[in-house]
Length: 426
Image (tube, rainbow, N blue to C red; front, side, top):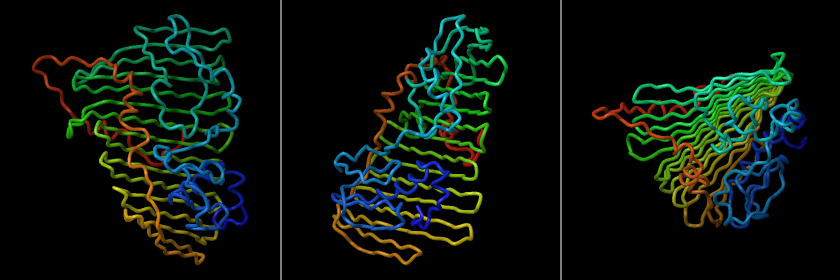
């Protein structure tokens, strides 16, 4: 690591390797041609356009090895990630305990729900509804005490609102005999006269070590008021805080789809591990007609004043487009190093590549190279419809004769965007 001018040794010791490597490796795979790949710049050197191996996927993973991949198979391999690290080391024993086993959600009456004290994992995105196992109990209001002295409760209900809104919900929770551990879960489904449907979960808890967490997952179906197209939107927010370290993290993920192929995806994430903090934002937008925009921006810093980051963006349509990015580092004394690069793809087999760095590196060449990019999302409308059977099965509310619903989807469509880019961890 000492040879890398923009990554201090402390990073390799304390910051999660997956966070550091992904900052660099995401950028290195942006040059895609039949027989070339940029070398990963973890060594501190750059060999911009040296033909050395077959192109790799967009996300390299946690090491700097060169992974040959058939470029014809690259489409739809949008993100390849290693298994995520546990939120905090102190939770490792919990993750291998009985809590990983599947507990039936719809348990019989007078049978208490199983204690769930497992925090969410990082970088796991938006889970499909089948992974949540939502099952809404009817007319339940019960509680009890387990053999070990822990207590539990479960209740269900039904609420009504404007435009014929109907919300069915089930709440459950419990705590240990001494109150040091606690968990809560709420499941719900909503529908109204306009055809709006919603399915969601909210979970929170804390354990005896002082670790606390909160997460929610929501998916909705509605008809867009401008295009009259059906749309499905999904979101997930997660956060956790360590009770033994100055550590915590927050994530906000969202996905939006319509029946014509328009797709938008993104995430905002940040966290802290003792003296180090990190942030990440990324987004993807497909217009359903071949135009695509993708971008990533990551950065981190230490309490000593060291800062580093990486960002890139690509825009394409019908084989014509551009890619550009920057990797940078700032030392505690304020000394800045950066390397910028770019590509212009003309759609005729010619690609203009250019770049420079503050250490005097520079290149400006035109090469013969095929252009590869994903014009369609690897997970699109057909996929999300196939994975949303429980959402689609929600029974719509019948509208009384002569009554017209008030349609205002503005609040719905924006509810999946972050309201605060940097909210404090739980």
